[in-house]
Amino acid sequence: MTTKKFMMVNRKAPYGTIYAWEALEVVLIAAAFEQDVSLAFLDDGVYQLKKGHNTKAIETKAFEKTWGALEDYDITKLYVAQESLAERGLTADDLAVPVEVLSRAEIGKLMEEQDVILSF
Amino acid sequence: MKFSILVNEGPYTHEASDTAYQFAKAVLAKGHEIFRIFFYHDGVNNATRLTTPPQDDRNIVSRWSKLAQENNLDLVVCVAAAQRRGIVDEGEMKRNGKDATNLAPGFRISGLGQLIEAGIQSDRLVVFGD
Amino acid sequence: MLHIVNKSPYDRPALNSVLATAEGGTILLIEDGVFAAVKGGAEEAKVKAAMAKFKFYALQSDLEARGMADRVIDGVTVTDYAGFVDLVAEHKTCQSWL
Image (tube, rainbow over all chains, first blue to last red; front, top):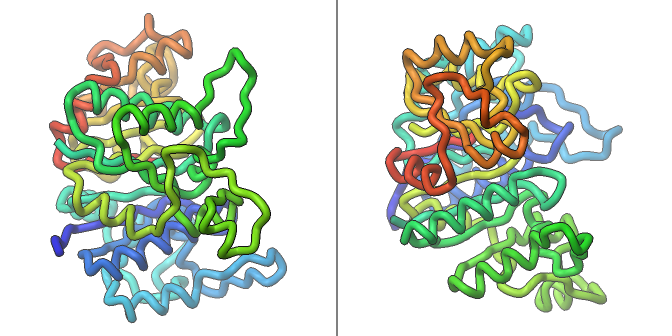
C-alpha cells in the first residue's frame, strides 16, 4: 500500500467539544493503515496533553490513557508548539506523554513536508 | 485530478456543509474527479433523510443526494460518529436493535478507514468544518 | 501550501495562527474568514503587512453574502468557487485552520 505523510493538526481544547476525541480515533486508524502519521499540537490543542485529567464528574472519557497507547501503534511523532505552551503557562513537564517541543516555525516547516493535513 | 472532501459539521448551524457542496460542484464543473466525500463529527447529520427545512430554504440533505446520483459520487458517513448521533441504515438498525432507519439516498455508512483511504488515493483532500 | 481560514479575525485567532506558523504561501479566506479581507478595520494593517510573505484570496460569494464585496483590501484577490478549486489544485497540500 502507498504510504503517505499524514499530519493531524490539533488546535482545540478537549471536552468543550468532541473534536479532539474524534481526531484521536482518526490517528489510530491512520496508523492501522501503516501511514506515516504525526500529530501537531498548537494553540488550545496543547491542553489535550495536560496530565491529570479527571473527567469522572463530567461523565466523559478521559484522554490520558490513549496517549500512552499511541506508542503501541508506532505513533511517536508528537510535536507541540513551544509558544502555545508558554502562552498558557505550561511546560513539557505538565504533559502526559513525551513530546517534541518545537517552535511554531519549525512545526510550520514540518507541515510543508506533508501529503495530507487533517484538521478537526 | 482526484479530489476528496471531508465535512466535519452538520447542516444549517455552520456554513461548512454549504461551502463543501459548492466546492464539490465546482470540482466537478472543472472536470476533476471526486474520489469520495466523507462525513465526520456532526457532519454525519448531513445524511438524515428526515430533514425538512422550510420550503423557501435549501434542502442540504437532498442536495447531496441529488449531486451523488447525478455524478455517481461516493458519500460515506463515519459509522462511529453516526452511531453516536443516531444516523442509521438497515444494517445498523439490525445490528443495534433500533426500530427505524434515516440514512438518505446516495449515502453509505462505513468506517474511518474510508477517510484514510481517501487521503491515500486522492491528489487533494480538502477539509470543511468549524 | 494553501491555508484556508474560515474564522473572523475579530472573533478567533485562526489567521494569527497561520501567520505565526507558516513561512509563507497562500491564504484563502472563506466563510467568516472573509472579514479579514475587509478594509477599514483594526485587522487591516496586519493583513497588509502579511502580504510581504503571503498571497491573499477571498471567496466572492462569502464577501457578497456579508455585504462586504465593495470594500476589499487592495492586494487581496477576490475569487469564485472555480478559483477556489484551482488554488487547491495548484498547491501540493492544503490546510484548513478550523
